Length: 503
Image (cartoon, rainbow, N blue to C red; front, side):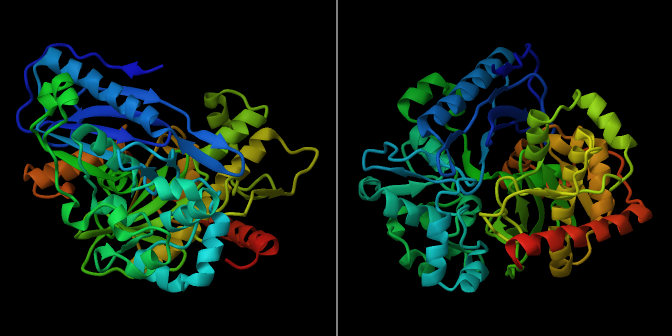
């Protein structure tokens, strides 16, 4: 059921007010932020939803269904603001990265929104790797040839749904489609397009070599000349429905990962954002003219002056959810108490937590989870602890590459409900990374990041770093545990090689 926060009448807050729309992989939400990037309580709507899973690894969602959730959230916050007499200065939007859908000439979807975790294009990615130089593609686009990205998805559609390819006039992300519905025109950000696998990160343009290998033409994608430009005039139906949301700037949708970094306060290259929600990522924002793509990781953009470099895990909090669903675990509070009481690596288990395949650093979409060392005395809590530790060790692989590429970080800032509600797991992360992990106390770091980027673009703040979030006390690594986790990483890496070969 939607979670609503009906506002009570109040005086307008001083300075700009930024309305945010965050379209994630499991929910849609609206919030309101003031000129300092602080959430204004009492506004917005949160609607959870579930992605559709199909045979063969399909993960998708109907585009108009998802638009409907966005429109419901926007209508609710318009009503809340009407009651309070507060109106937004601008609208900031963020959505999950690496998604795509097709549109016909009339603007109707020809496909669902294909999610980044959809693996049906894995064979197409391997076929592309024989036509293109994989290392060259990775170096230029910051993206490997993998089912997560558009080159593989488009090649797969051309092979399996040729009629759909012929019907499709445009290819775009969901955020672009939402703007197309609301404004009747294209609106895209460098941030979103940079995560497609079609963008040359250092040239800040589409990558012609990659495009030439695909069954699509450059004019079927967002025009470069229109990127990052806000739009302000809603089509008539929505102008009537939301009169106070028209004639203000709506900034094209940004990638949610980039916004999460900014909202959690990890705005510089010496700060890493550790996000663990359903999936997980470890990222840095780097302001530079050029960025080399580290082996095993990816490079996208926040905007035309800032890169986002890091790695991602398909399985983060989803590992805990899977264990909770299948094992005889007690309630969350009892689980947390048991995890905190259990010494690190006291279970004798080695786990590869690749339940939905591997992204960073090996990019083996066909890899799957493995667990060895089970005995008749092994408990469900031990299996859970071993699995959460194993996720932390996968982050250590990403961390080591980032450290080699960018230097040792001064700070790791954690966000995402999977970590923030589990101090025990946060401590595992600190021990596995051999670095303090500081929790961000913002409930919605991603929405906040979108708001801060909008405030920066409006000139209301000098930079996104000028409004740091509240942070909690860091979890400090235990030197003895650090050594044990390093040994456990060797065992996990050895198991990976035995099962899947060198990454």
